[in-house]
Length: 370
Ligand SMILES: [Zn+2]
Ligand SMILES: [Zn+2]
View (tube, rainbow, N blue to C red):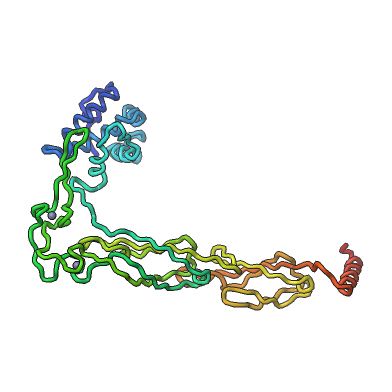
């Protein structure tokens, strides 16, 4: 960071340079230093890029003109002795960089700034798979284990995935002549470049088997039906996915297998509502039961539970039955069952009931309640 060169100097420009001049200088130098070219210079290429990132953005350029490498926060204020880290600043702006007027440019930058370096390493990885599994409400409460049968590419058991017939020797890969990389010519606005990529046939090893595996024909994988046990933790919510690392499709020629995602759909319950880790329902009790108190039978996921309803219970009161709710994923404990009591007002009364209630009402009146 210390003694950084001036951005204008890097691009060979005066401070008064116009936008067009900045762009022109940048294109010329980027072309000159591009590391995929013979005589290119990666460090200089990056330097040119950083300078351009700042000077091509009016806001950043203004800030740079004003503060220089010290940055807008001044030297020593979180910027260190080397000044403000403009390269970081430039990096942040990178996603917003407009490639639209430099067609063909995106690829070079991607190679360069995607972390791949000059030789792009295409990792051979198997495809991720997703399966949807519908489970019952109770399975989501307690957790469960399900057996799945899935037809997918699996590692060839004959060659263990390397594609070679057991006992076969190796020979030099004819595609890359043992180099492990192939060169791909690419035309861009900056001219033609040659990009090196990992050889698709030997995947960089430079060697291929003398005899290919008779079972997978050298692919290292075969399609087959596989049984998979899936542990579904208690408390899973509808729509959540379980990731089974490495259980997706096998990659060709011994690459890394993809992952298998099991997306869980929980069938709703007819009797219960889930709220977090609690399970909710409603029971109806009669007006005398509410007034006099009773023992009510409450349906829970674990079966009916007897609950004492005290005398004088109001409609809408919620009672908690501990530990009858939804389990936590670590199986340590469960939420609660919350039952809301609904007091039913009788709609039809017999003559006797009517008389009794009228008597009751008179009595209440005497107590001064009405
Ligand atoms: Zn095989
Ligand atoms: Zn090769």
